[in-house]
Length: 382
Image 1 (cartoon, rainbow, N blue to C red):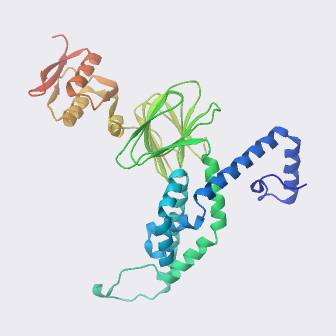
Image 2 (cartoon, rainbow, N blue to C red):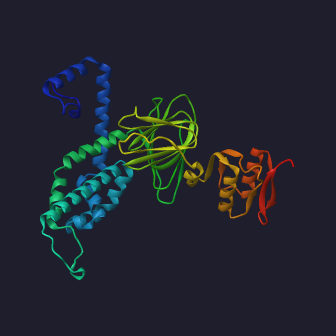
Image 3 (tube, rainbow, N blue to C red):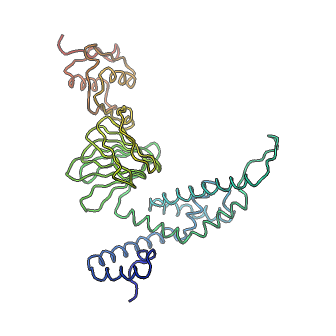
């Protein structure tokens, strides 16, 4: 029987295991149909990628040349210049290619570090005057050894590209540039404020699961609907039912701060290693390590970039100091109110008088004075 199943399923199996898998697929019509759909999707994604990026090696040149122009030969630099507009369009159309570019650059840096260590160890130490030293430039030998190693992996690289595109199928991507933020309204009514230079991928599959992927920083306001809401990052999984929290994620670290509700933070590799955060706490996951024990933090400061102060049992005296510095106006508090604690969100974009009135209502207090002479928060009754 000819193989009409995807070879990726079989490449890691011995012949006996391959025969057993073929038999299982032949006996289960639903599984076989699902596999056929998956294979068709993979083929479609591969075709889209080949259409937008017909020469995979251009992506390699783009990743290496932008990081270190010395690694490119003159004819390759000319090719890259000519293809750059279409190449950048392909990267914009397939955000997962950013992951591939980062991986190529990381591999190059690792190779360079090993090369330098090996060559330095092989050379005798020679004293030089500072005036005799020349700028270090990638040697031809190192360049061509590295490029040969990369060239040998072009076929595997293409397979990785298809895998990444398959992984990201069914996700809608939102990306912010430096200096800009974006509010993303999710289908369940939840809201995400995406910070600058960040990327959010939202699962659009209608399977009842609420899941997003984040690189960068974002504030989440999740509405409860009975289904968990999961934020995936490179190192962690954050699971909530309904809450307001902030996530900062890089390729090696994830930090979560909780403004309200409750969240569970776990490592991606071992989800059973988790901690539960309470409002006003933070935790982080570094690499594959277990989450750090939750600790108290200044939520208002951690989430100040959102344009909203999220106070969590914060003394009124501390709030007055923060408002005074932000609005550049004198704000004092009657000693009897300084220790009163406030919980809730307050917009930093509102006029100072409006913010103070909201605080006064929450504390059954009143506001004396004005912006010119300074404000004072006092008890509403003498």
